[in-house]
Length: 303
Image 1 (cartoon, rainbow, N blue to C red):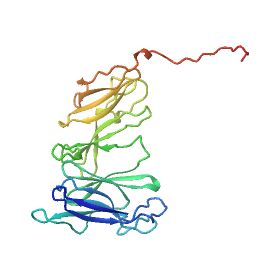
Image 2: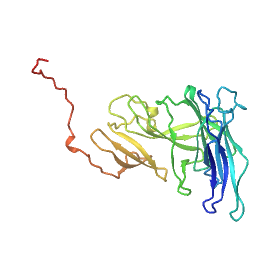
Image 3: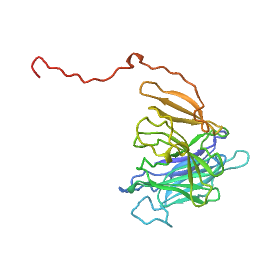
């Protein structure tokens, strides 16, 4: 087993949060999990005084009935300190959110919203939820993660300049960025989308950028940047590296069959206006132009 403790680095005071015994009774079935508290993390929006963790409400056994329709739940415990840096204490657990399926991950945006993910392993399904500070939950999507061609991607995150934490980028109160590998019949073509959830009825997605389209092959305009078939096509692979803090400039990498990877800065509103920031040369230029060839000949033994 293990003990989960919270330490104050300045006063060296500590508090025991949970004493987790050995996990030797996890059921051997799909969607089974530990019956003990797991996945501990600090709440990034509460000055690191609140700890979040997950616990199975069904005892970790999917064969048993869920409790109030929930199999997993996220709980919060506040870490309290006496005035003058005294002893640390932990409050009683308070339910933060309940889940019908198994907990997968929990992330926060730079505006205080929470993105909660749950999964069901037996049929490879996943759900993404948007959790507001008032406790209201809204489902963003429910899908199978094996459908890579229609994957919406993952929420774009970056290091917050104020706290140093990795947070999901939320440019407005009702939007977030999505980035993905962009699997397609023509190969992977990474993309950057803007997800808008202002409407209570449905969400809308706008494609802001996508890897250059190959010279050959049919394209779907609905999956291209701006909803239009690109006029310029080239056989290169581009990948999104990061979104700068102006939420307008992105860094991308670009490479081809004969050109090494180099990095560029470009604007989302003016994709053709870009600045190359590296000029790495080919590591083996003498091999450029070398092609494969099948040679057939008759051996001395007649074969």
